[in-house]
Length: 182
Figure 1 (cartoon, rainbow, N blue to C red):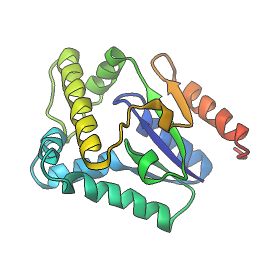
Figure 2: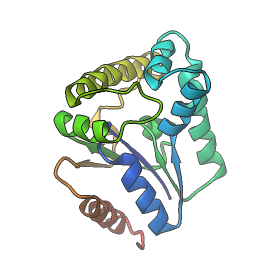
Figure 3: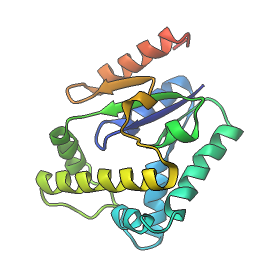
């Protein structure tokens, strides 16, 4: 089984995906980390890479082709990817949402090395709003898909007030309902 986890920044995608992959004995992949590495190798932040992506499709295509190829070569993995649902249509598709204030708080605490450092939660909130809009525009331009349209997903969970263990349990309960032994 392939599971894609998409969602808002700070919703817990990577954290829960890693834990579930470990418990299921699955491989874990993170397209955001791949794109962050692409940015860093070019001396850019992820937001600069995204800005470049408004005009140059390769900034998205490389990562998107990577995950589509993964699905052809491998089974039993979890991918943290905003567009995983689109490029791996046979996957079980999960979306994690979180209130914008909590998203900004979580991202502020755990700022990534491929992001421009922000000095306040409000600055992070502004950055995330701009990033979401940039992503939405690029994905519509290149793929005609809105990753924030919740109808694409099999399971949607609001993580705003959930601890990691509660989130994991919600996902495992869903997997059990789908017949998976976990």
